[in-house]
Amino acid sequence: MSVPGIVQSRLDGEQVAAQVSLGGEDGLYVTRTRTLIYRADGLLSDESVEEYPHDAERIEISEGRRKSAISLDYGIDGEEKFKIPSNRLYEALHPVLAGVLNAADVTGPDETVKQTYQFSELTLVITSERVVKHVGAAVWDEDYEEFHFDDVTALDVEEGSVSSQIIIESEGRPQRIKTPSDQTREVRERIERALLSHHGASSYDEFARAHADPEEQAEAEGAAAADDDEAEQEADPLASGGVDPIDANPPELDDDGAIIEDEASVTTGDRRDDEVTADEASEAAARAAKASTSDQSAAGADAGPEVAESSESASADGDVGQGFEETTESAQSAERTTGPAATGTATTDSAATADTADGSAETADAEAEVGESSGFADSGFEPASSELERDTTEEQLAALTEAVQRQNELLAEQQHTLQQLIEELSRGR
Image (cartoon, rainbow, N blue to C red; front, top):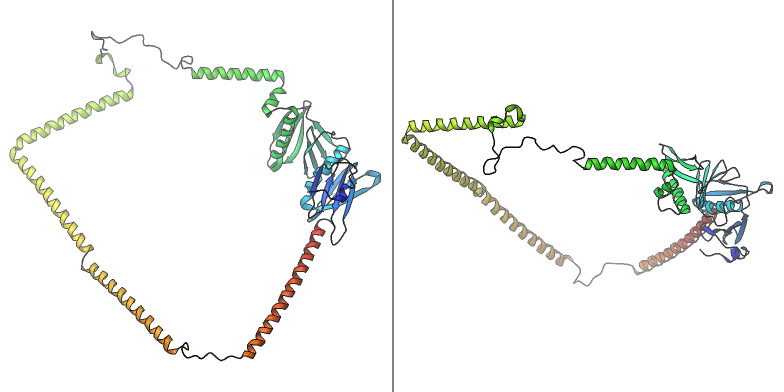
């Protein structure tokens, strides 16, 4: 965005510190001592520049749906106001407020205004060196509070459902700033960034360690050392008694060095319940299997070889019969699937398809013959028409087309004019 020549002629050697577009070619230009409002040449006004000095006692704003106003109160010298589009209000308010704070010596010449917030009647300004807080109807006046970053030792947040509080500990006392909960995180992060940048800290933990109370820091280090000792004891199983001591009665060894297992020396009371149960179950299962095998052997011996032969014969016959039944069922299933009904259906479908194709070909030939016999293609005659009527119709169409085009051009010019008027009115003219 370039600075217009008429604005440059009014700078008087000052540099433009900030500029904000107000729509179209209009713009707001802020210098160290004043704010300049530039209005471009339009339908409602000529090119102009308005000046508003920064030595104001207070700033007030009034918001509208399309246009808003910023008022500068100069005390006994009166009040001046300029209008800007509502969608550019806070974008323009930020540099204007920074200029007024600098002119009132609230901020230093090398101090930069980072962010400006307005929550109902609370105005919060974050600079590179401090936080400026004002509570009242005006955006700024002389009844303000400031918390310099040199005096800040801690930063915290108390969250709530509707509103939250940012706690700035300055000179050992907590200072609370009430903000909407949906913007608390942003405000807190803005303050933290400016605070860390002012102290040259890379993180908030580093800043907190540098500004912590020595006694509290020693207590915290002692608690951390105790926690480390407990963690080491938990990690070392010997220190915590997690390993059982070596048995005082070692097992006996035979001549080859193997352990002699004495079943009699181990009593049922010394075993675990699950081991006793498993051993008893295994012994019971072995006894039952042994008894069943003995009964089957005795029964086979009494029946003799005839029973065995008959059993084998019955088994073989059963297998053959089962195989024959499976083969018969497979054959019947195949016959049901590919039987005469399926064959007949396929034949019928093929015949129907062929008849349909023949009928379509005959219909096309008949239509072609009718077209050739009833058309005027070879007769040399044309439909009756009037040359006079055709000429008159073409002239009327041409005249109507020209009139419509002219009306469209007039409508486009009117629409452009209306749009320009609406744009100039929305910029506050």
